Image 1 (cartoon, rainbow, N blue to C red):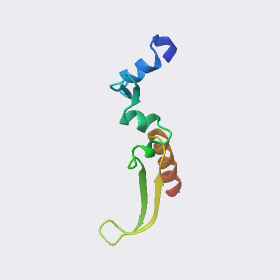
Image 2: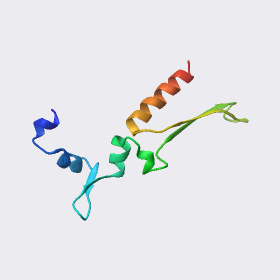
Image 3: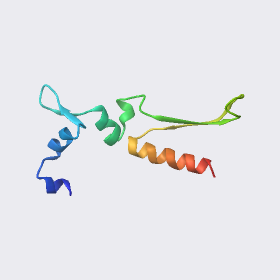
Image 4: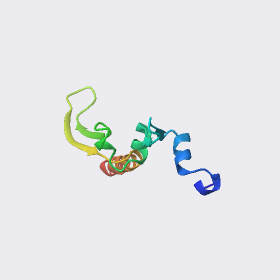
Length: 92
């Protein structure tokens, strides 16, 4: 099924999916979920919406030294893909 198959407007579908809401002036605005999933630069509005991945040396019970810290910024689906690729490459 596509959006065209529903007969609904993109605005109505966005509201039903809780990725947008109407403000007092009846202007459609993205929700936090909408920004995280679809926002091209959600960090401009939600500065803490990034993923940080650290690589450590040492054992869990002993001293640990951070070898590397990577920051990932984008929308949530892209960050998940980027982090997955990073972790897989780091484990090879």
